Amino acid sequence: MDYHRCMTMISAPRAAMSLASNGAVADDVALSSAAALFRSFGEPSRLAIVSHLALGEHNVRDLTEHLGLAQSTVSAHLRCLLDCGMVTVRAVGRSSVFALAASGELLDFLAAAERLLAATGDAVQLCPTYGDGSRSSAEPRP
Image (cartoon, helix red, strand yellow):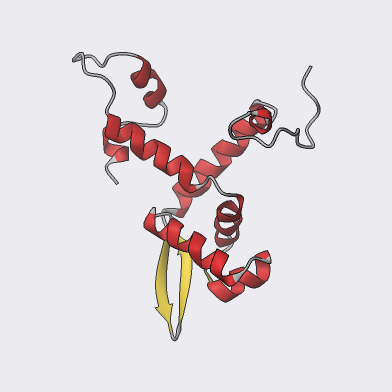
């Protein structure tokens, strides 16, 4: 993925709001890649699958049983994660076994997201566009 070579996540917001040293605006491709990365985790079922794969390799049947999701749902989300490069797949007999790709970086990313949610008091839940309008079990904000 070219994103990591073009721009880091930390510099992306600053670069998007200002001109680069050569006067060019931030790389649209890098920003689009970052947005696609976040969208790839934008479905709770996909996050559940990723969290489960953090425990180790699983096939679709195992994920279906462990997560209580329909086989078609698990397969569709795994296809999305595979297309986004977030998981890998290998054949074992007649089944496919899935694992996290770049698991260290992916787990660091998810841990950073959890820290951000904790730091903001889960305020994203109240976002009229992306939240569900409710507060999590965290204490209410003043």
